[in-house]
Length: 291
Image (cartoon, rainbow, N blue to C red; front, side, top):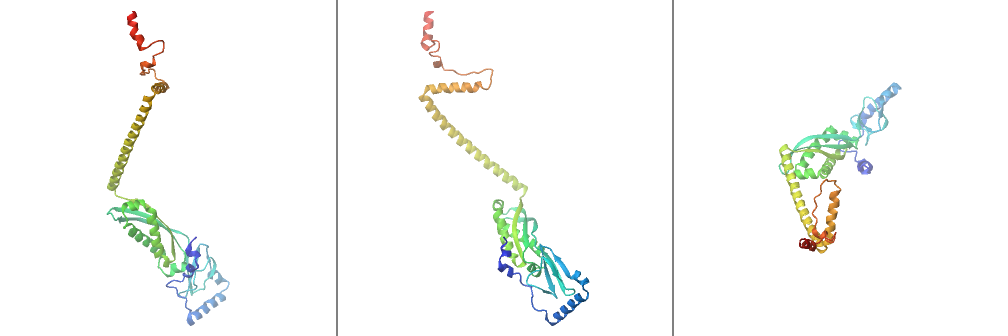
């Protein structure tokens, strides 16, 4: 909820500098009487010219003989405007999007960048927007450009790229404080794009690539070290149990066989053949003697 609309203090502050609520005086009263008499004489034709319709999202600031008629704007609905002495100005209270064109900025670390953004704001006090500034939308647009350049000029390129939300919030705060007397409430500020020179982009890309290559080499080295430690632990376990080594051989053979190879070359230790068909190392030694 908008604090400026809901707060009674903000409602009372609609009467800012430039609003004069003094009485009309003798001449003003005479002119008011003549205008009102003219409406009565030309009734009902004049009523169609004096009645004005104000939409729900609009407010009307009525000037009577150059003075603002009330402390706050009129509307929505029907309002009565007297001929010859009353002039009214319609003010749109809907949110307005202000597109900030690309601004060429020199950052704190001497890097030239182009930054553009968008500002969302709306008028919460129609009287202040009309009485205190000539063109409230143009003034807000120019102030947004200046504030964007001033804030980003104090930041480094890395801070601009990494802290867009914080920078946008600081810009919003500065704009909100500066436009308070204009009856403007800044709802949101967004930084759309940050453009840097092509040569700097290549340098940053090369730096990032080198950083990732360094990390990849470090991770590969750590992986090799962990793998060597695991192999050492596995070798200790296999050395304690020779049968485990034979089972590992068989498991490897089963894995290779699933690939449907036509020829499989697999090293088979001789001690596995011991006890199979009476073949042993002693039998090999005795066979030539029997012959």
